[in-house]
Image 1 (cartoon, rainbow, N blue to C red):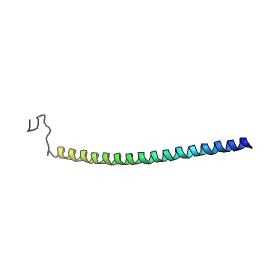
Image 2: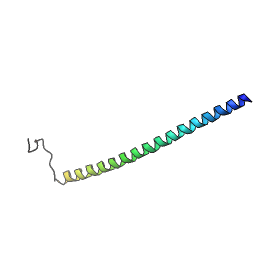
Image 3: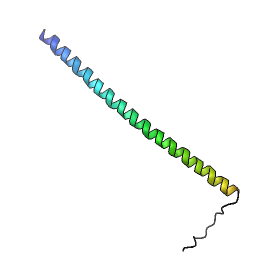
Image 4: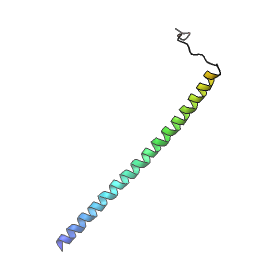
Length: 72
């Protein structure tokens, strides 16, 4: 009966270890999802900025030159 108790204790330990790993993986997925959502929002903002700049350039509101800024 002692071997059965040892086997059961080992099984409980393995299940506990798996539950701990699953909890850490769940936390990691939540953290990565938050980072991904923040990056998505940043990319969308940058995309809007690029579209606005492109529209300004097409409208001739801003010219690109190789001249240094006036403070040089």
